[in-house]
Length: 235
Length: 235
DNA sequence: CGGCTCCTTGATCAAGGTCAAGACATGTGG
DNA sequence: CCACATGTCTTGACCTTGATCAAGGAGCCG
Image (cartoon, rainbow over all chains, first blue to last red; front, side, top):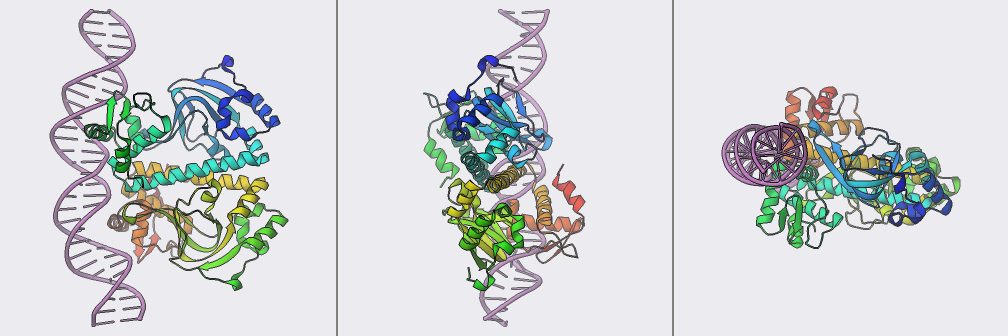
């Protein structure tokens, strides 16, 4: 984490705010938020918070990309989701008053605004539009987690890898050459799919042979998204 | 579902209410709830709501046990959680305004009180104690789902079966002979663990040979919970 | 009794994990 | 500029886990 007073963001003018639950704040709450929040620059590899620690607050992603993961046997990561501009992270543990159940690590240099628990909970309990938006958020995430449980339990590796490519495609979009705009190591992809690095590599090169994708270093080019959708069995 | 006017439950006197988010209602809201809710008796096997359908409301479990599952390939169920007295089901889809992502099926005869969406959302948006309690609920569930994703992705069958026995133990308790007080078919156990019926059977008989459990029909007697905890690798 | 459903066990097989080795890319210091 | 080290990627060989198939047993009910 780096101090970056010159990067100070005024909530009033923050265009990211429209994407978040904070769009429901009234003027007074917005001023409080602006006053109490702290914006900081984070570099690739920085850890924002650690699994098991009580989070002191919530982070609003203004710029960059993070991965949220749990650490399992032998330190193997299981990536649960990514966070990008407009996403709120750490609110689960703050709202349920439990320790963080994931670790948040920066994978693309980021600007994060920190909002202290107290203020966050305070606003939530006073502003029903805000809190209803949060409920919708956590219920949506819950739906996604439940879906992924089914996938892990029942789908084959091939189906899951196809599904993850689609997820990355939908989450990060593609550049003008159809390369997905995120750079993950093979190991990281494996840690989303829930498999071994070698297995992901094999599956990716199968998809390449079949003409569904192309590979250029860490970048994945999507050539036939429909084929992948059929494989991943989204019905 | 059966009508059961004689089973009518007055929210004011309902001792289950103290266990639920409804304990935060004021007198007026409680009267509304009492007036608008509908209590019904359900028999084992009854389906309360179906995956994919827009839920018309939320159910409060007064008595009985239900399983909540998603249906996967070839109709194979993945059980996500159970609901017992004091639990609220169906609120995820109501609050996120999505279709139900699970099916709710009765496994022990139940009394459920139905609360229409409109009333439920209305109360949530007006009563912040109530809505904060709901947030906490969904965030907790989210934490559990995330934990299970890690388990499915990284743990062996043996570890997962041990873990599920502990889950059932904690959720349903034991009778005076240490038998877990829930009756699940082997297939249902397999559908929690995320594996084949035969694999669960083999693992259970292994645990029996090792002296961790005893089996009597569908009932599981826990003989050495600590050993199971070590196996399931909860640290 | 026959006809269910569920449970159990054995045999077989494939998916995918693990191990090992080499390729490739990148960065560093001499 | 080269030699070397480091980290990631890739491929092949092998082996384990657990899925699948098949058959028989136990319990229950009309």
